[in-house]
Image (cartoon, rainbow, N blue to C red; front, side, top):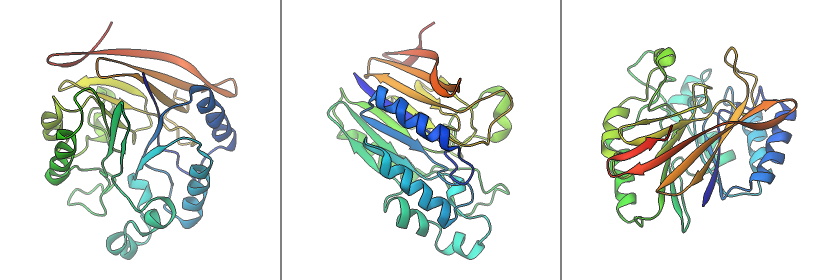
Length: 264
């Protein structure tokens, strides 16, 4: 059984040290094969914040896969954003923006959905391109049929009705149709809300903000644990409470011929 820890929206610059230490302690008990980090490592993409994020990553004793979020692009320095958007990311975090992790039991593929600029007035909105979809499909063509297939992006491919104003990743619907029989689960963040939902036969699982104080009303810090294989997956929500992360709920999914379905 594969165990993946999914953390997101760490926002170094407004993180809590007690949450960080508790997260590391909880991960030690879970002992995941992979830690997925779905973007927004920093709050304002400053060098100080990137250094703090780098120091945190150096304490993780597990393999990790990490993709950028919109907050990892500077908002204050337009020349830097347009001309050298990923210079700090590549210096402090990784030379890769779209990494891949392979294991005997799974493949995890990163997608960079953050954009330096857009015709859309909200530059924080993400996008996935045809080239990215084609690259992912090529990678999956050589993946063993028994391997669990995970994609990681920062921006949402599905949103609950109360949060549709946050807008889905651009071209996400087209991408989901292309991924329908090839991808098992997409791990994302951005909206600081934890949920899992099947759409187009694919599980879309979002993590809340794991370490930061940028919380939605009536929500707390959280992360997810994914357990299972290509036939059955569970998504466990770990929420902050009583000075530690603790189990809050579980959703279970089963794969059928027409895709994934949630068990009730």
